[in-house]
Every structure is written in C-alpha cells, then in structure tokens.
Image 1 (spheres, rainbow, N blue to C red):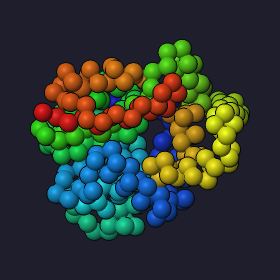
Image 2: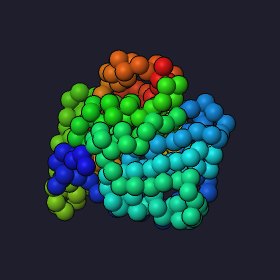
Image 3: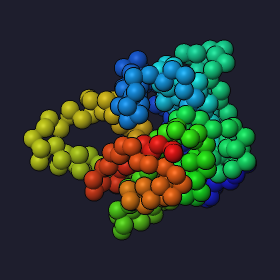
Image 4: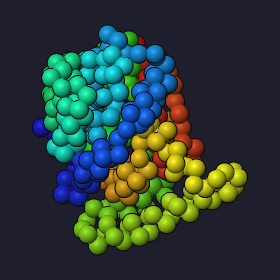
Length: 271
C-alpha cells in the first residue's frame, strides 16, 4: 500500500471524525447532500458510480448514497474507515451498493484495481497525503471519460502557508505541541471571525449557530483539522486547474476562498 509521508507526525484525522459523529444530525446530512447537488449541478446521483477518496467521517459517502449513487469509500486512516462503516451501519446496513475499504490514494495499483467512476470526490484530502500532486494524478486516473472530479485543495498563501505548516508540525509532535498550538489557534480564529463580523456588521454569534450550513460540518471539528492537519500542502487555483487540464480535464465550476488559508473547490469534467 502506498505510504504517506511523515507517518509518525500524522494528525489523528479518525479521532477527530469520531467526535464529529456524536453531533451528526439529519440537518447536517441534508446540508452535505445540498452541497454535492450544488457543486455537481445535479438533482440526484441515480445511476452514478461515486468514489469517495479519503472518506473521513463518511458523511459525503452517505450523502451520495442517499442521492442514489453506488458508492465506494476508502481512507488511509483506519479510524476514519471505522467512522464511515459506522454511518453505513446506521443508515444503510447490509447494503451491497456501498463498499468501504482501507486504502491509500498514493497506491496507484490499488486505484487502478477499482476501475473508473462517474464522480471522484476528494474534499480536503489530497493535500494531507504528503505527496499531493501524485495523489491528484491517481485521483484523475479514476474518472471515466465524461465523468467528474470534485476536489478541494488548501489555498496557497505563500509565507502564511509556510508558517501554518510549521504550527501543524508542532501540534502533531506531542501533547505540549497540541496545547501550545490550540492556545494560539483558538483565540486567533475567534478574533479573525470577530473582525470579519464587525466589519460586515453581522451578529458575531451567528456564524457559530449556522456553521452546520457549511457542508453540514462542525466548527470545532474543522478548527482542530486546521490546527493539526498534517502532512500539509497547498496550491494556487491556477496550479490546480493547469495540472488537471494537462490530464484531459475541463474546469466546470470553481469556488475560491479569496485570500484566506481555507480550501478552494473545483469540479472538473473529463473529456
């Protein structure tokens, strides 16, 4: 199986997703479904084969299955695989149209063995493998002609991205690193959010109440991922578009995060 870099410093993604499952509600699932329909510009996924590369909590595999797709989910992190299986057991027990495995997107032979899919989905995953461009190339190879690739990649902010990478390494090093990073990170994110809300004259508590409308996610889960998600790489929107275009893909839809350190979202169609 393809190995991820800096394995001993990897963030415990699966533990973070297990916490998220304790707050998962029907409303959050519907938001995940809505985000898939919006970006893919469809009303359902009936008759589509959906590959979830790095399934994490399993939320978007579940959303795709509820929208009618035949789903295959895999993740490198065994605890993330367990989270995805937990969701299948809750909502689709004994369903042969949803397969869940442990595997690596860096394992080209494994990816080839699965065949090709109508939709390959990998949101906020490929930049955590330690070999992002290789991972993206393998994901591209899993899309059928006429199919779609839906990915999200951390935005390249130059110096700030380099500082963020150092902080993530510190977080993953030991318990002191986690305490140190969170003691800086939580106040930082809170102040940034407060500044944005004051400038735009919004209720500063509204974003926390309504955060689940952001793809059904949890702000605490996302903040912990932002603090500790390592390995960590970034790319500009132009670099991602050019890379995929060279592999026979056409950009169909893009949602950028401006000048922030968040993810840019892309939907490509394969010719």
